[in-house]
Length: 207
Image (cartoon, rainbow, N blue to C red; front, side, top):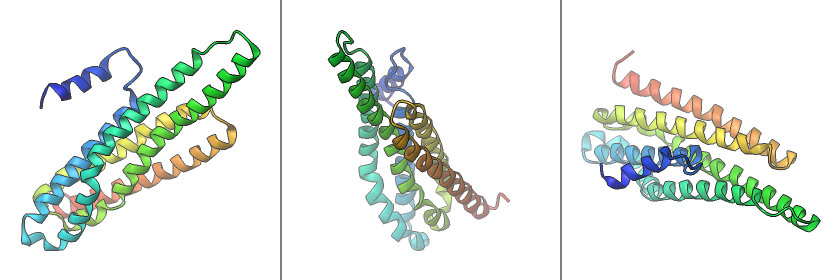
């Protein structure tokens, strides 16, 4: 732990609206990338877990750049929301100003809807690979993998909240697309997490 980590937490805790929930969803995804990487490395460290080596190598190729990408996704979410705030502050002194302001609000709101949606997409790409790792990973690291799974589920849920809160500010057609897609991802996330936890609990003989 270091001052940089504390600084991020303090920034989230401040009265400014960013970083907010969307950024936290991305940072939560980042923690899942990190934990998954650790489990993969611990699996690769022993020939005893040879059946988990292929998926571990595959996951490392995703998680290593994913850690940095999660920070980019967090910043994108902050930037998108800041742009919405800027759009609402635009001048309304003339009909032309009103039209421009309306267009900018719509454009920035679409970006603010898409930013957390992309976080959910990234989380799901990782999530779909975890059942295979759960079946073959180093048993001593399974609780860390269970934690990574829970974090992915949380990341997607938090991201979905931030998608849905912005839907009313975009066109009805675009809003319906996002609503249907994010609900599909939510359902899939819940099912994947349940599957992964069951695999892990069975391997640990907890039920």
